[in-house]
Image 1: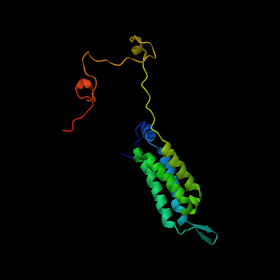
Image 2 (image 1 turned 90 degrees about the vertical axis):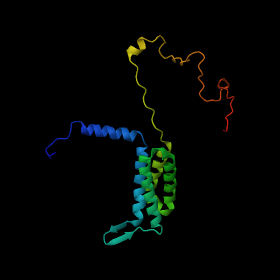
Image 3 (image 1 turned 45 degrees about the horizontal axis):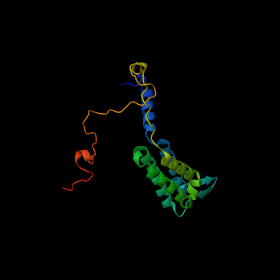
Length: 182
């Protein structure tokens, strides 16, 4: 493939739609906010500000603690992206780390990191997967049906004399609710 070969038609659109579908199945924005919150918390305690010939060091005595909090927030952000089933734990942990960053690392990365991590953690805790849309019915299937529109169809009753209880505790199965131990 040479440099002059054009990309496949619609490849960008297809990749964009794939990313959009992936993003919609997990707390993407919560993870992004938590990761963005971890960067200033981790960076500011080690930053040096140059004002002319004056160097202002913003190092704190808890620089290692700030580094650990920032790295943990970034890891929690990636966890929210790739392990969506533990989003409650990751959200609560992000909120707690954001609160701990206030006294440890320059007021939580000068409040910027604190706010991003706090909002991202709250978004992670409150995230719920969306309900997939129901398939739409066509006119052809509605015309042949005798039930009125909007009515709930009756459940299949099965054949007469067939046991429908699969729990194994029905008196019809001879179990009367007790399970044998051996």
